Image (cartoon, rainbow, N blue to C red):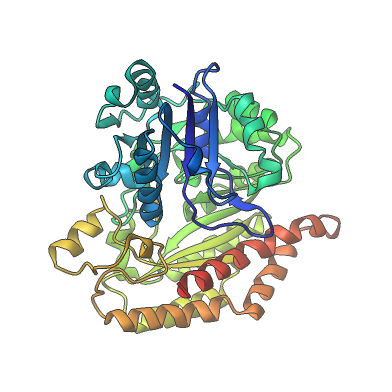
Length: 446
Ligand code: SF4
């Protein structure tokens, strides 16, 4: 084997010279490549791909999301033409292996940490001939010792100079069952926890001061494993961190002691999936939210009172939504104390019950996969025409991401900090909203 090249197709590009988030899964897979085999990570968000150098003897691994699958396909076809072995993994490959198989020697279904090692052996032994069509790993393995990031990869990626936000995993999986969620189809519904000493070791070796957790629903651990959270917060409190953020749910408001401890551990912001303020949507929300605005308002107030921020995540276009839902959403967002807001259009991703439903009802739109970015309408809604839903969504985004609203939320967010810390925190406070505004604007001019 000449070398292993792991490729992340372009999605967001660069902002002020750096890509938004580090290629975390690739860093872990690259760390499993034996030391004697050269390994490279090519992130198209950071630089153009040197595809003309790819040739026989190279093993090319491409990660796939549904929204980037067309780019992944082009890269895969070219690398195959030039004689390399090509494997595609990631969310789209896991949820649509038959589609992915049409343009790769191998498809990696599931988490891949074990099957990737088997593929490396197969390719080393027999080249392309040795590659199996499908490598499937859905065992939801114990995370202990699993694919720790090696020092070689830490140097290779140089996160400080190329990425704004390092990613980190502490837990994986989510026992909820939201009808539109792809995360649980990839990471499973069993909550798994990394040993705390491994988390601390990784943070220290990578030298990261800020990070965003890739965990599907970190906040649910407050309920399911409070002792683990307390021990984790104790350990992180001792580190010199500037702040970290996670995906969460509003049930954390019921745990004041853990919230206090989390602030001492430098946890800065929870991204909370409230999803809807329409209680008629509760069956879609898998138990984490009942779509009741009053409950959400109370939870936001309680969480913020502990000195931790809340970014509200909302989804529009459920079958029970009407034009009144958009007005109710705007009223809620304006009156709530949210630090930042993300609102997306419900999207029927492959492998989800929601897609099965709209497909059975003949409501899927014939659009390119690049429209599966949660900003385009990709199915025929129930109480709107496609154009009406698009217009209602645009109306809401213009309201939420107006410069005055971003400034208002940013200043409110900064007010959580003592004056001496406010300067350091200013970037983080404004950048979340600004990032969403940019995403929305960018995708709508495509
Ligand atoms: S709570 Fe979040 S991670 Fe869990 S099933 Fe729902 S959308 Fe998925």
